[in-house]
Image (cartoon, rainbow, N blue to C red):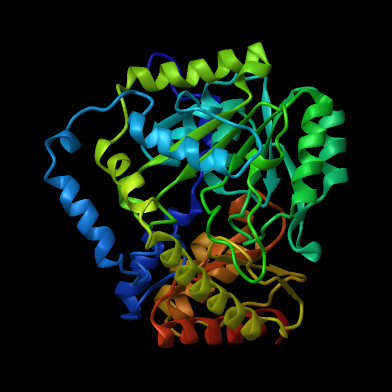
Length: 429
């Protein structure tokens, strides 16, 4: 090219969750091992089936001509009215349909949220952080993301002192990202944690982004606390969607709820820029938006969520029981979402790989790599279990993320028995 065309932020775009797939496919071909895909949070791919009553609602909508048409840029009015009412019934900050904008999945929303900020403006992310957020923030800024510490020795709760100090000494930080319930850790934050973050945002004149896609997937005795209940007058954006909760990930349907845009003129301009960016695209997909009020408003929906949460609670407790007594790791129960994270407290020695061709292939990827990437790739080669290195979630902590989604009891048992065995081999033998 006559001049460089790639933006400096492009180097920050990384998504190990899917990048590992090609390596897994090679191992599958060479070893005939069945790959157990623990790298991605797709409930349907892991064997969950939508109940017939939800499928019937969607089938009925497919027969309606308007499900094939454009919708308003912000989204269907009746759906936004339904969601605003859901929020308002919880108490806290009140919104109208005009405070809601639909996107083609939260990946679309996240991309716009970060890309429409001035490059000099930073949003501090948790560490570990979900890769879509940290990559988008780093790409927007043209340098690695700024982060605050989540403490694995304290239920993965944010270190509030660390967050406040990083904000105090870095005036470029104008926003705070919260992921609650958290991906990748499975933590659910109590109200006092959220209150503390809101207080910091208020003190320093910041806005908050809160990814609440897992807001109704909470269990093991925890209760969800929504940002809208505690945000007071702080400008904020909540991210929600149907990909995990219904679950319907292929619908690519998410939305943002905007709180207190009228409290700050600069924030109001920013939200308007997000809307205008969506305006250029015309709108988001109509059919899944039409389904939301009919499904979430159905009397069967509450029971459906309760049953799903009981399932994830059982899986969380079984997984924790399998791993908790292994030396040199930190593992916490999951209380929300459907992920669990394991942290290594020491360097590993390696896992034996029987197939020499596969071993040579894997060694090309783990040479000079992190300790946890070495574990993940050797685990994949030796067992077919595909997890994600923790360092790919914007943290220096070594370990891995695994899901709790597997519906086949025998596969789930095999997965965690082998994880326990291979962690012990890697760290302790």
